Image 1: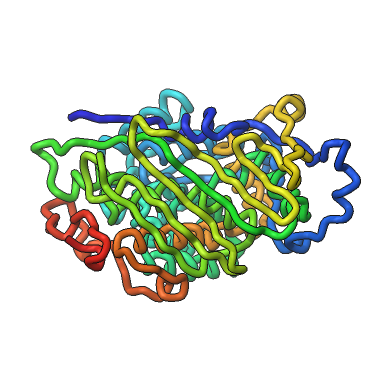
Image 2 (image 1 turned 60 degrees about the vertical axis):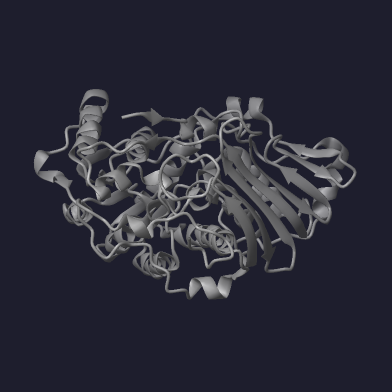
Length: 452
């Protein structure tokens, strides 16, 4: 089996992100410090959430956690949680494949001195129910994205706090499931955090606060990018059935991942929607498949979103080696702009009026990993008994990416209202390790209704 691999975690936290490890109380450069009081807030204080980001979660109730999806992201997420808080015991694991579950089981025993009882290790498509029913307080949902709405819905039904890796839906049916479950989670007082870790990245949070306070004024436009190299893929092995191959190679199949605009670029789309409080009204996209090896996805998209207030957001993503890379967000306002690459806010004349201070942040805090800090926030809400649900925001960002994908696949304009009501459902009727009708998984051709 040949496997090509780009470490997504390193890419997210590395140079392409710039400043993935820093936070500082918001300060303006002295030359413009008097301007802050004249700003009209973008949103009223109290109408948006700003996380507290201590280095570690508060002490409190001992918590039992289960992991659904024991691959790379599930394994990474549980280690992040154990770094984020004391008093956490891993008591249940679930996966479709024994080897993936065993790998995490071994890792926990060898490196964290946690031995999950064998009777709480579950294999199969119903493993998520068994993990949640095993008596856990909290659950990490890190299966391929198509399964997350159903897994989240069951966790909420059983009153279990959830961490959902992004994206949290890949189709309109999944979106509606997430929205309904989010409302129920709020009513039950649950804590639900998602893998949009920039919401817990110190430099992003400080910029977010200033933008809400009106430092760049009314939002007039923006650009978001995830232009990087090819992700990993797995060539089919003779002993693998159709379903096993698809799931082991899930990041290349649109029914499992939603395509890379949904699975990966949702990060950047989410940042713009979070920072501005705006949802798209419609989307016009184009994309193509140039060099992807397996699956049925595109490897590039370009989208023009029209947002609620009439402004435009340009979104661009690409997974092709050897091309110009850019993973960033830029937001333009009537009074200035913010750039995530430099962690700067500038006025209309190009003067820097705020810059995130990594050095000061390093002196103030010990923990700078947003993958850990999102779990700090999750545990703090659980131990304080505070309801906190991020899943609706992340579902909206996922839906924006779905809109863009469908526009590129079909060649037509998509609208928010039409898409959230669409009957589209990527989940196969039959879930079992065995043969599939792979003839339905073809690369879309724009102008033909998205089909061959």
